[in-house]
Image 1 (cartoon, rainbow, N blue to C red):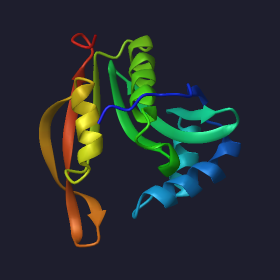
Image 2 (tube, one colour; image 1 turned 90 degrees about the horizontal axis):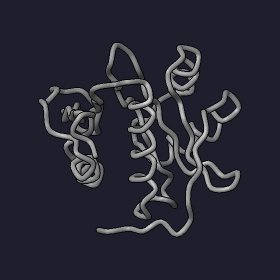
Image 3 (cartoon, helix red, strand yellow; image 1 turned 45 degrees about the vertical axis):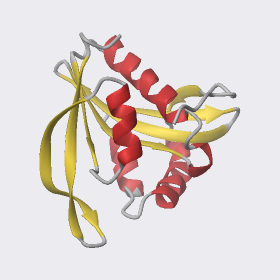
Image 4 (cartoon, rainbow, N blue to C red; image 1 turned 135 degrees about the horizontal axis):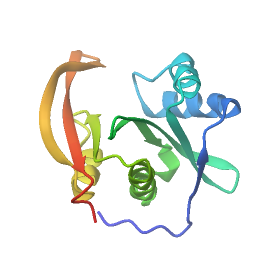
Length: 157
């Protein structure tokens, strides 16, 4: 699917007062969401936390850990009403640029094998399969594995 952005998103650092909206979106999108404490801890720990927005409306958010020449995408979410419109692709490009600005040589992420839309996006952006992490995510049927993916920033165009 090739989605075009008709409205350009803007990006800004996440603030403490965004957490209510972020948590509500997290609960709307995921059956096993992060908690308010997860987001608060990420902000307080100095992780690179971002929101994607249109005007003043938060359309998505992300948490990126940057250290030792690596970036690790811990969470990225686009709200249900913004999905399939190119916002995830634009947000990922922005996060990759942030990682590059911090001189990250690699960027890692985990994704559910069942999340084929996200896996297709990551592959399109140049991420490659690294390994499978067994029983990483909670699911309605016990645990689901995680696909570990890597972007070599030197190869990213």
